[in-house]
Image (tube, rainbow, N blue to C red; front, side, top):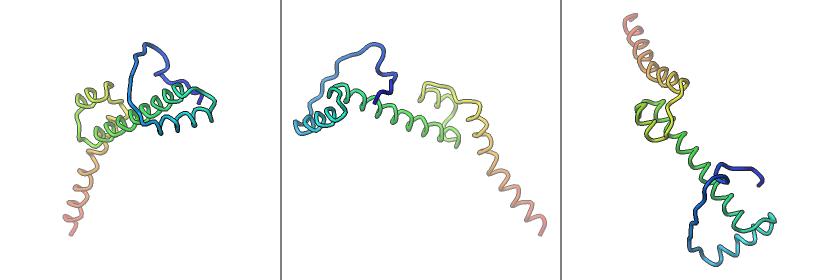
Length: 112
């Protein structure tokens, strides 16, 4: 658990939540196993979860952009970043695939 996350640096703020006592006892058990404080363990796990969830959401937006379901502007508004050139090329190739398929069917019909 020594990996540094971007969430460990910069400004902090306090975040209070109510948890069941049984959950707190279990968290303490896990933290003792790793020989760190319960708070440090919880901060690490939250940061890890948020990082994974954010990556999953961005991957979903990338797939939607490549599939032509969102525009470049919508992608940027939703993710905060512009689509890469590679994503744009993939999008263009995805858009070409149905045309090529239809053209191949039309050519087969003409041959008959």
